[in-house]
Length: 478
Image 1: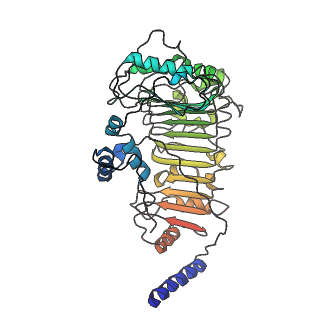
Image 2: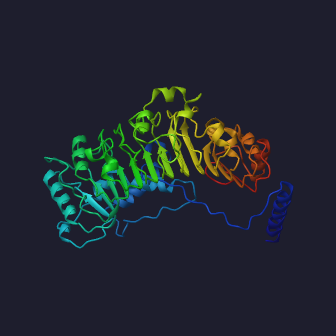
Image 3: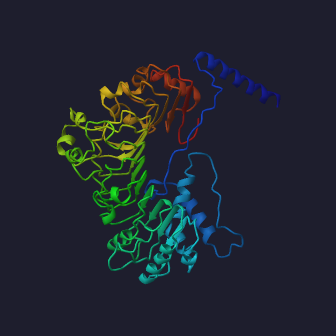
């Protein structure tokens, strides 16, 4: 016992000596770490090593001889083990959907005074009647006093065939709704009933009230948007929109025109496999209608948060070959910039090369496969950079941002491929900053085996005077 205490004291003394040797400073102020944003979409092929865990959970949930309630299972463990991904994979598993069907009670439309309904399920896993779907939607239409948020989930084995689509207005008569999320099955192999044109017909009849503030569309498999959201119509149909999200719409080729939303603060585009351009126009067309001019507050004047992830075909913001081809030389001068963008996430957009400059961005996430020709800000703009926090892959560090863009940086998290003990360009980037970095985190660096080598890593990359340096390998602190 005494020997163990003595050893602990010796280690504490070593830590105190290292603190003096390397010039580390203690901070009494707690550093609050905001959780990273996620979504319920998980690429199963990206998750490895959890097959046994998924099988165990499935057996517990589906075992008919289990006498206790297993409708809720706790998934616990250390950080970085993929607990959220595991839960999402189980939740979205076809066998779970088959054995835990979701459906709405009949006659719910008679609750004429109902004000809160977080979820409305359309269809039934065991029903293929198209008329029953129409009847369900009519019950939703009868709930005119609904307020707040509404999630409309369309289950598989659902069909929808009607005449004069767009005239039913199932949710257009609900002026008190502020947030609507429409969720389609989202998997072409598992829809088992609803065809692309049927999804389009149903979405045509799901036009929200003009007062709606937030709209999310998940899993829609049509290639085009409904008439109320096509071309410039979305800004006319929903003029008060502040949040828009399009996720898992794999066949969608063209987005609604977003340039006329003057109040839009949040935009998320994820898992849109066939999207090549955000705006289906040229930049000249934007100038002709007043968006994208030289005036600084005409291009997305209120946008603060932009999220682009898993867009394999995305090339640029506009269909404009002249700008796209000359962007690397002087094309950036032709592009308007986001005047108030605070946080930007670009994840796995390998063909994105032409992007509006972001001189005001404070938090930046550049992850996954990113094209080396992409530029977030120009050299002239980076001199006045407001960038404070960067989450970035080591391969993107030197190519995407001008060195001058790091001048006000306070926090950096680098995701390495684990094959090297150094990050190219890191020392040069941090030496250019007039103010010292407060927190540096390097994840998945397999060659860093202990805190001492983490400091050696810092010295090898010419990094000095940083109060907090964390190195991780295999998702754990060494």
